[in-house]
Length: 206
Image (tube, rainbow, N blue to C red):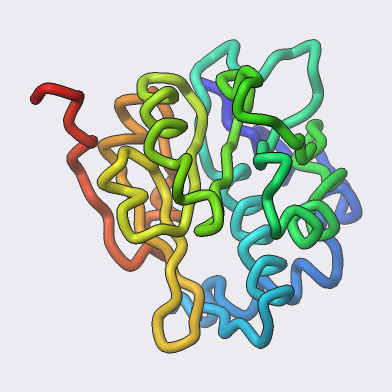
């Protein structure tokens, strides 16, 4: 298996491993203050999605993809969003082009007709809920980390779901769905999750 962050802490300079001063500041709001997760309070929609983008960057560092999925000839980690995603600007401006070890985080706009199986991470905001079920179903068993926001995202087979709790950004994890797609989510993510579901979504007809 290939972890996006392999050896980055040992080999990368501070400038390479730093997300940026702005994103680092956002992460510090909720990550491990004295060992206790402190979720971020979103001050605006733009802030909310900048924080979620920082989460996505953090997830990419702490997920193991199967060997060969992260192509040695392609130095990017591809975060895909649909081309009509209303929050694409916040996501792109926050993390596009940032380094993860020897790789670059690339935000790719896709249409529903494109091959989303080539993505490493797929983010579906609550505005994409009408297409969510079909898209997530098409990725079952494919090593693409799916992250969404709707209340039924995990039951549809999604892997990580953002939600707001008392105005703070939290997330839940469907570990079974990740396992069934041969993705290994680090315990450093699981410890920050509000809840962890062990069972994958049932296949049609079950």
